[in-house]
Image (cartoon, rainbow, N blue to C red):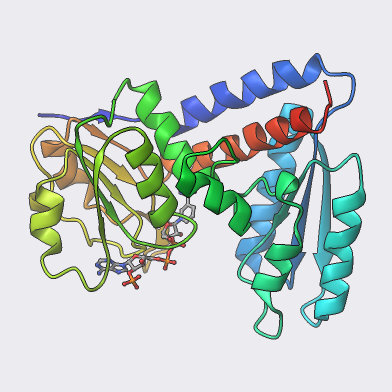
Length: 281
Ligand code: NAP
């Protein structure tokens, strides 16, 4: 069986266009601020991507690039200012922060109604309780991809590889909300192969290239590769052995061009949602 390749790039373009059309009709446009501490090249390129996305969607954008030696008090001041600025609806603090900074204190300082990346415990708590809240961009993007291809997790065996707070755990919660039977795997899972082989929907977010081999994929499964790793040649790769898995899967995401662009589009959706909550329209 040759798998259907799930087109994250195409879906992201559609989602961003929907946001753009809605923003175009608004009297006061939504605004996003990105806070970046240090000059890590990956973070800088990530920040540039957000700027471009906001430009495409008509969203006001402001970036705060703080030096590596920024103090906790300075960082808290910036977050406090952004919390109070009416043109800013969403605050994205790029993590991890340099070691001398207290990331948890910084996250707690973000106003929950501006927490478009869903890192604040109030929003994570709402997510766990199944309440209306922001949805973390990457796992929500995976759900968007499933919806786009009319894949309903209800009653399916869903296996999530990875239990991080930004991907694995919220992913499991979102699949559970859609009535999947969810297993979360991690480095202490004794037989990862057997767990994966049972999955109707397999989401891998381990950050380990080659972890998911073709024989770990059930015939007809949906395989979502969240991971973005660089191989020795500097090329982007996921966790999944794509060619072998595509032989067995019914649907599969490529890397790049799968979950990555959809994550970015969901951030635009969340920023729009925050602006609507703030009474912009
Ligand atoms: P992370 O915090 O490093 O978490 C990785 C998780 O995978 C951990 O729970 C770890 O288990 C588990 N794991 C690692 N090796 C494993 C193995 N051999 N067998 C089973 N489980 C294993 O990473 P993350 O932040 O969640 O990100 C995961 C990947 O997604 C990375 O490649 C990242 O670049 C990518 N990512 C992509 C997007 C996107 O937009 N597509 C967004 C965010 C992240 P333990 O808990 O036991 O250590």
